[in-house]
Image (cartoon, rainbow, N blue to C red):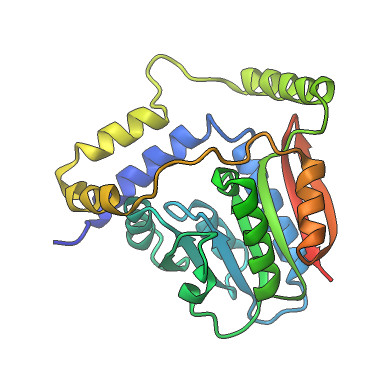
Length: 255
């Protein structure tokens, strides 16, 4: 039996609530990513967008509302989140199961033309630095000239003094916007509750078999280092278009 719309909607709503505590000014960051994408696609009749690490389709759904003529390909490796997206946000994107950064992962996307904009938010920091570099190079290969990667994530500056300062400013901003209350569900609680839902049992069995072991990621890689990697893998122009603390939207445009 497939996942019901009601169950998918409930779990996506709970996902949205708990995610607000981990992405600083999450809705504003989504809006800025959409602003940048809209600008980059201004002269495209049917832009092709690629959503990397799409989860349950949160960003894809917002982009589909902003750019209704766009075709969106949303990719993730988690079968639970992908099925939630396919069910709850079925009209937003074409969802693809692939491991970003693996050899040949872009072949699984079955792209019929070059991508206009690749977007991602709090997803690529899970990749080790060498895999991240390969991923940047693979993205440059599928993007059209003038296309771009728009990445919303935490990008600390070089040097402890500066990174401590941006982290402190971000923390205080999060405190002013409201943190977890005692009744709030966090990331771990969401996953434990979802795993106990009988309607998701088959998906969690698949998840246990398919997810690779967690790596060290690149959470501490500075924005300067990201910029260097992007420029050496095919991106000519890199700029921050929004920042609060070390939470940024970084745009890298292919030459």
